[in-house]
Structure formats: structure tokens, C-alpha cells
Image (tube, rainbow, N blue to C red; front, side):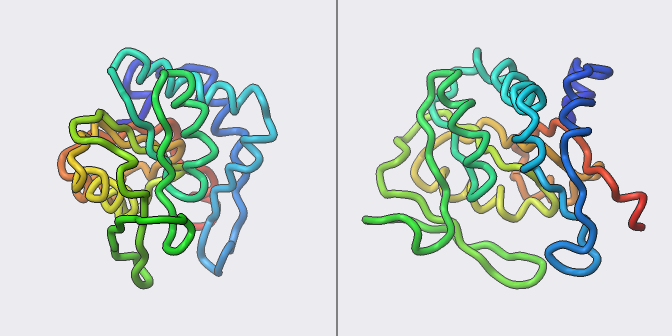
Length: 191
């Protein structure tokens, strides 16, 4: 669900967040309208709005874990976790975590990838939200859910700053809610 459909319609914070995201045509390859959130991070007010909206949503949901998907989920997850009194778990690409890890493979439009986390990072029955910057197909979020649920965690919701208007991957989220702040910018200009 989009934040604007959940009581935040017309909220100027959402407009500020959307305006702060730069669109880079043909990056990283031709035909891609890259949603660059680094410009959101440069706008301290828009960045704070982003964190505040997520914190307002999750502060009373007894969330004990915020899991961030590499790499841009790491930019939002720790701040949200600190604000709601939860721990932060990084979900990393292969080979980037020392020690024992567990992993989950997933399909991409152009191949395969894998997410890893430390063994013991999450305990059974811990309530988790998963955060990333953007959802398109839902494959990465689905892999993150499977990884956490394989350890007995309860994934409460997935959250993204940006989501396609008709999130194609929502069916991959096994019926779990998806909370998205804004729609991507610049798609009409390219299509």
C-alpha cells in the first residue's frame, strides 16, 4: 500500500521526498530510469521526513528487528531501528559477512543473486520489518522474507521508499503487507 492511500494523501512530506529523488536516465544501462536516492540523503529535511514516516508507522507495532537489504536498505534501516528500539540486521550480498551465514537465492530479471545474514542474527518469533529503497519485481524482498522466516522470525511487513504504481512483485510477498512512500519519478518522460 502506498502511504498516500493510508492517511497521508496530500502530506507535503511525501511531495518533498519525491522531489528529492533524482532520476538518472539510462543508468546503469539503456532503458533504465534509475531512481537515485543519494539526492534524498543530501536533503536533510526530506531524509528526516522519510525516517519519520516509517517510525510513525512502526513505533507501536512491537517490532524487534529491522532488516535492511543491501545496500540502500542500510541507509534507512539503522535510523528506523534506533528510533523504534529495535535491532538492525544487514542482509548482504554473498561473501560480505564474516563468520557463519545462512543464505537465500533468488531470481532476477537478468540472472540470479543471493542474500546472506549471520547465523543467530534473528531469533524465533521476533517481529521483523524489511526495508529497502525500491521495489520493482519483489524478488529481493521475497528472498529476504524467506531468509528471515527460515529462522522462525515473523515478517510483519516490507517497506520501501519507492514502489512501482502496480507493484508487479506483490504476489511474491506471500500475502505480507508492502508499505511504500512514493511512486517512481520520470517514468512518463522515458516511456
